[in-house]
Amino acid sequence: MPSFAQPTVPKARVEKIPAREAVRVRRPSRNEALDAVKTLIRWAGDDPEREGLVGTPDRVVRSYEEFFSGYEEDPVALLQRTFEETDGYDEIVMLKDIRFESHCEHHIAPIIGKVHIAYLPSNRVVGISKLARLVEVYAKRLQIQEKMTAQIANTLDEVLQPKGVAVVIEAAHQCMTTRGVHKSDVTMVTSRMLGAFRDNGETRREFLTMIGRTSI
Image (cartoon, rainbow, N blue to C red; front, side, top):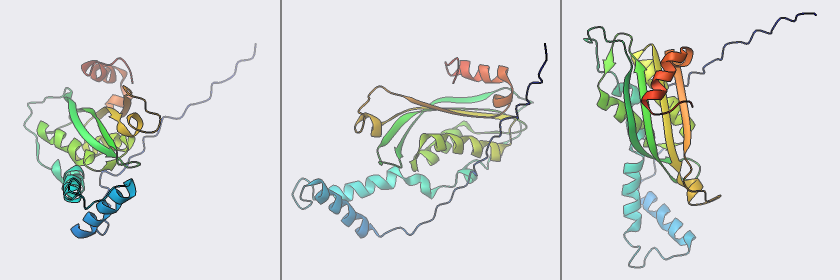
């Protein structure tokens, strides 16, 4: 019986999305932002000058300053302070169940969930609070979950240059639960594995076990 050589399957290519994505636009003045909110209120069918709504434009603008404060921070600069005195520690460093609130860039509706981050240090580590702040920087922007997952992982990989990085995000999207298909109790899961977490099955399984999952 003739034998056929199996085709060589090329190794999956991991696209590196640049950690820095500085999108610079001309910001409107505060008064322009207030007027925009008033326009949306009128579009909704109400009067922005009535008593219950007269203060709403200011409250919305102040909320946006908080919701999207991530545009004011450089995630790479955030991780610059690292520590090399680790006594040779070379096991997984993990911070899990990092709660975040973001907004989807398609409907500006909330995305609420949690992030699990792990890395396998090469010769330096970073303070764990910086991992939580890294999540905040990217969450406080208009986002899609897939992009946010890649941004967190790629930034850690670029700055720390570890042996591997793993990021998993589990989140509920209000653009799906409160409008459109109106499907509640639905969680979206995304992952980004680099280095040892992508190439070494044992390291990957150890990470997944630590976050209470058997697979992604």
